[in-house]
Length: 172
Image (cartoon, rainbow, N blue to C red; front, side, top):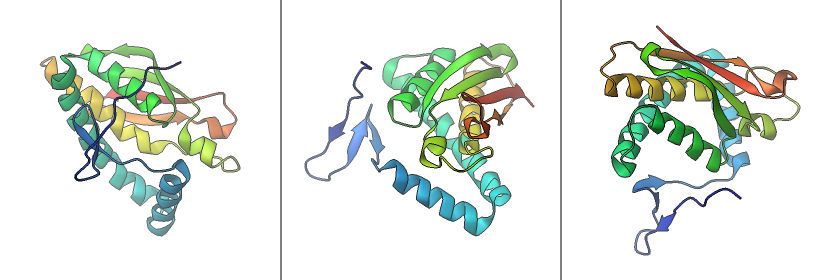
């Protein structure tokens, strides 16, 4: 059994928080249907271009807040990020490898929410996560005093017949 995620619901406002960060809890189909609708309206390439920097910014912010909240540093924050994503239903994330001084990592994803919600669709369905991993690695680099910036991409998707998805984080 996985550890429980602490959720506090403010009786006055109804706002949910975890680790002092406001949260929104929605069904997977709701999120994925909205994701697909925007992707369809804008086109995959344009939507991916918009999501990447937004995800990067959000992951960087999250890492900074969680570092202070839990007294974590460096790659421990990135590992905590993968753990929390896994606990929140996005999929099961883990490092296959990482090298913080060189801003590189390989992330293994099983049971991606995007793949599970779209069982008849093939392609790189999990691209939304790419900016998240670059943002988390950039936060680690900044904390370690390294000027190297990271890029991330989905290099394998379970929807293409593989057992799991793979994301590659590499220096720019």
